[in-house]
Image 1 (cartoon, rainbow, N blue to C red):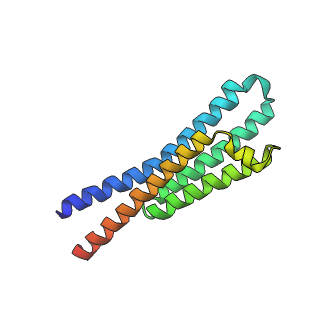
Image 2: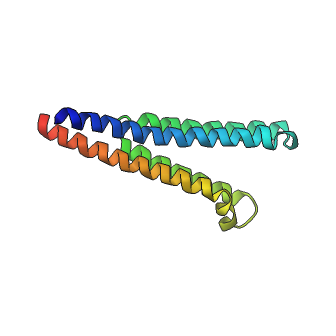
Image 3: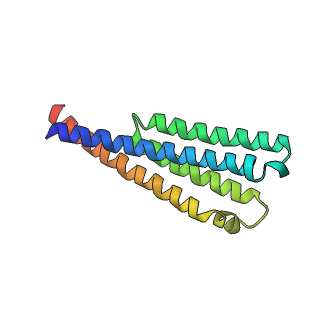
Length: 139
């Protein structure tokens, strides 16, 4: 029974970490496709470099949260979700339209990323719950 809980805890922790990393990877890839393939000919090189750098920093943040999730999975998932929405609000406020209009752009992806990170939080909570149960048995 304890082996089952250990396996489930490992699975839930892996799932939580995967959601964080998956969102970071997809965000980075979408940015790179938009910057270099879709708008590539219309953007000045310095602008592409700056946006690519910003995207790499955001990706590094998600990698950091993925690493943090090894030891603090719930905290890492919550910080990933907060970081994601802080970024969305910042970008929406910078595009010249109203904040609401900016937030509605790409809403499907934003909802999907939010749901993914919420699933990560759920998995992380379950992993921490299982860890507490195992610590009670073996602690």
